[in-house]
Amino acid sequence: MKYYRTLAGQTNRKKLKINQDSLIVKKYLCNQIDWHLFGVFDGHGQNGHIISQLISRLMPKVLEYKLIENRTSNTNDIKQILINTFQHIENDLVDNSNIACNFSGSTAIVTLLMGSKIYCANVGDSRAVFFYRLGDTWFNRALSFDHKPNKQIELKRIIGQGGRVEQSFFDGKRQGAYRVWLPHDEIPGLAMSRSIGDLVAKQVGVIAEPEILRFKIPNNGFILIGSDGLWDKMDYESIQKILHIYYPPLNQIDVESAIQRILGETYTKWDQMDSARDDITIILIYVEI
Image (cartoon, rainbow, N blue to C red; front, side, top):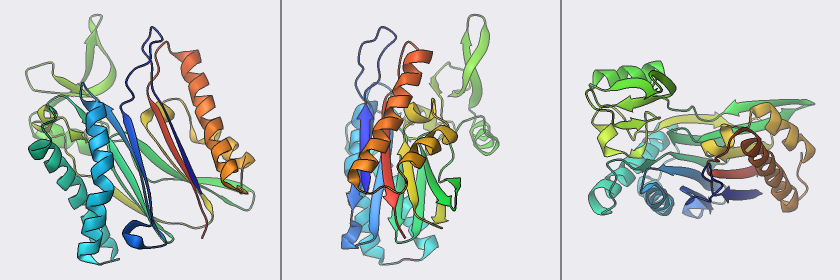
């Protein structure tokens, strides 16, 4: 059972923005009854919404083709197929799409469900988490990690390729999120260290290669995938309290109710804490093993 919602953000003057998030829900990948693909793509920059839409169209087609071509279930092979899929899409964007992406790009997070195994491939700061219960105790397992440029491994690569990682200069001081800059210019100011697109940032160590985590599902539970519009305001404990109400879901309506409640609480927190609001996209999947 799965459900998804997406909500456009708004400016600090309460005007709705173009929703730059896109998503995919593809069941029965390669005609396999227990292979399913889910993904969230959060665009940024002038053409971010176009890029995220392109990725959502290409991702299931390219991945399905590569899985059929290779005919394998070996873990290392699946990981390499996911890496190759991301690179294929990056190449299509740059070489074939005619979309200006010097200063535009997108996050990309996909979860490939293969029986009781989850493969999660991620670039950027959208996020996937698996929530499950053993007895009366709830657990959560991160299926991805945010790619921020001040993380040690990311910072080392960017500095090694001549980039700078600093906060923005505002009101006479450096403040806010750490961003990627060219060595002698205040561009591009990208707040993530991996993405699809963002060609200027690619000159100084930003990459489109996904980090891939594999997880064997220990019990029935929920996969929750969201853009940073969700995770900027909601912590895991708050989400678990909502999921607890609907566990186990009796039908699709319960899953829909759970995600609607998560979206509602996220919206309320944005409204209470900020004049603007980021796009919010959520996919919720109940998995039974």
